[in-house]
Image 1: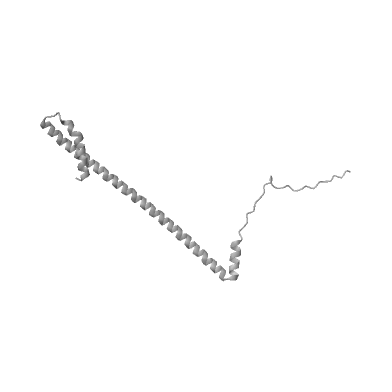
Image 2: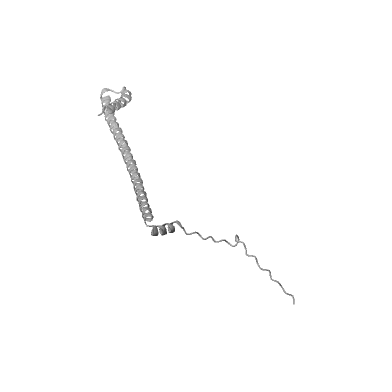
Length: 138
C-alpha cells in the first residue's frame, strides 16, 4: 500500500478502535480484525474510485483534444478551399488580361448583372389621365 493509503487506514482505525474499550480481550481481537478488514475494504474502494475519476478525466481530455483536432482540420480545409478559389480567380484574371478581344468580352459580361424588374401594384402606380368625352346634343 502507498503512504497515503496507510495514513488513511490509520485515521480510520483511530476513529473506530477507541470505541471498543469496553470489550474483553477475545471479543476485542475479533472486533479489531473485523475493523481492519473493513478499513482495508474501504481503502480499496476509495482507491478504485480515485482511479476511475482519474481515468474519466483522462478520457474527457482526450475527447476535447480530438474535438480541437477536428476543428483545426476543418479550418485548414476551409482555408485550403479559399486559397484554391483565390488562385483560380487570379489565373482567370491573368488569362482575361492577356487576350484583349476575348478578355474584354468576358469582363464586360461578368460586370453587367441582370437587373430585377420590379412590378408596381395598382395601388401604388399612378393611374393614366382619362380623356373627357364630349357629348354632342342633338
